[in-house]
Length: 327
Image (cartoon, rainbow, N blue to C red; front, side, top):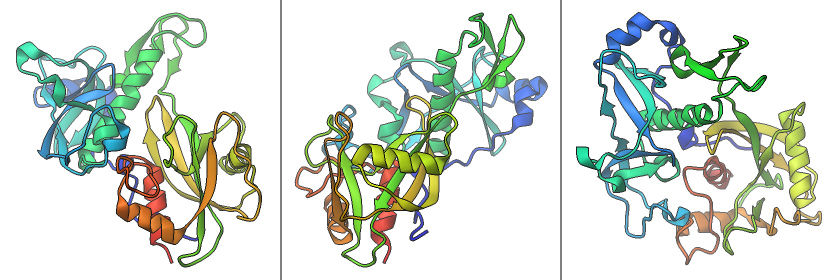
């Protein structure tokens, strides 16, 4: 390994205790329900947030290029109702004696909700504290799974929620199904060099605007090791062979259910690049000095930046910042 992540990926932070024993302890669940809090997530993956430090000008909910405008926010959870947990609610965990649950919902304007206060994980993940980020990413991931797991994958019969939302029980065959996570590798390919002239390989997808680049990524195939996936994906996407593959870290990416596994690898910058048709519009090697300039200049939404980079909510940004900070 030639460098390490200097800061954890923002969506890998969590301060809530995932107490597995509580998921099946109905008495404890009912005893704590009155003081529990609800993370309400709508069908578009948004939850109400309270901005404690408003983002700078140019921040727009629907524009990924404007998300990294600073600010800070906290989740706005709701109190519970009734004597027992809501049907279909997912127990996220406990913190300081308070249980947190996730439910589907939407803004209730009659109750005073302002729909403009609802934001998704991409927009708020980098500015929430560790507890808020961990609760939100888990809520989105598990609720997304429930939306697509209402029928048994074996025989198509209905399934019902069990273990406080952490598995579903097939009513016909009796077997259990658990939340799916699709592993994907994301790799920072560099030349193994040192100093300002060391180079990193970046690529742009066809759907992205000119100038926006990031590191390479792809899904792990069935029966494939993570290292084999790194070698295959890099060669498929840009035509180069890599070696000295090393693990860096991971981050959940519930869009809809991925786990991003970060690696570094070394490649020869003299080897010709062959961007995959339809997947990669262009690829290029960038020096550490130029990457540092781009990082100082701004983020995705800064049109004057010489190179537009991934936002802070992505583990790709942590990888690039860490490599840029290395010698």
